[in-house]
Image (cartoon, rainbow over all chains, first blue to last red; front, side):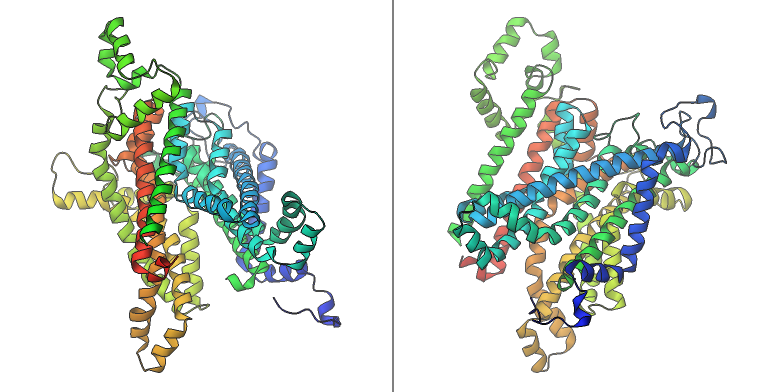
Length: 294
Length: 319
């Protein structure tokens, strides 16, 4: 924390936290490139049907396993479906699952983290102990059990990812809460009769928002990767709905890997680049929010 | 220290019980009669109605849910995890023959990732904010970003199909097994698992080294004329190992998750492959056994992390 000068000079006047943050973010070339890439992915996902011009689930056995051509930009799969169209439609599923799971993780983490920080004592001990255990538990195994017993489904996958990713955000919010707890304005709010819920929503969450945004970005990246992995193993998004993960499931034979790279390279590259881009944005955001951390 | 560890042990036992309740609840939600998981399929099909009723009673399946849970838990803790719905073999036996390959894969993968992570992490910490630091940051980000299965497919494409150097399927060649052959089968799965986990360790090693290198005792050592080598490896590295060891222990679950995916791609006959194929074949009792085993593994390593912490760092004992 640096002191704020009483009389802002001309050079300092334009420096709101947002602007300084934006300026720092712009110094991060990889993060900027990632934003552009991610915007392209989002546009492609939203206009998937219009861009590709093919129904992602239309089977056409007379054109099965065709190499990329002018009509089918990325070729066709074993049932003659257009790979490019499936790739773009899969982006909707992957981004959707990633954002939903990350949102759940952030909400859970913010609530539990601020509760732990505000209430302290045994509540803090229990919540933080749970955080350790949830974090060390592999989500994949949870998915194996839940999908195995109840059948795979997208909502269960989102809940499982969100429920097991909250501790990252929870720890951050708890840390911010602890440092805020002794501030005069919180004491004043308390003295004026504010309850824990009010303190959380009005004072703690807004103060913790910048680090929460960073955590949310990393959580999204992780969730997109997890969705791909689970769907690849057949535990997540089920065919015929395309997801980047389940598009690679069919590539598990040497003949496909060797002879039909258009079936497995595009979805694989798509996940890798998207997750990488979101992680780079997270890195850039972290530097923008708190340059000391890097 | 004793009280601290005892408290941790108690928490872990409590958490384990909570996990078993959750698993038991899922068993109840799963379709089918739970008796099918508890006696071999051939007995279930050939047995008379009386025999099955008698078994149901012996297993406590005609009692209230709490009693059922108790029967199930005590049986499981004694190694009786029921029978596979698919082939009627005891689940303990099925899992038992799969543990070896999984542990082998995880251990070698861990060693490989540490062999990469330590030199790079130390390098990045010593030359903080240099081109070396940024390079390793990109490596670690790539390692956590690129999905394991995609890395595995690329490796198969390059090293099995293009260059034809290494096999990509199974643990050994059944026709002519040998030590060299086993090693050749292990290389691709273990290296991919290692690469996938390097990023996590790399970050922690770098962070921990930077903290230690900035400490006062480092300046003292330098002032006394210790060589940079000695300062880094004798003083800083030793102390930075404490948090890194904890991370390694608590990352065991993630390592296992990576192994599950890799076993699937490389047809490695481990527990993960068994679990995933059990999901596809609705072999509930095997899934339950696998989940219990993983829960124990994760909790034991968590406890081990706590023990390591107190043994290596005397400051923790005071708490």
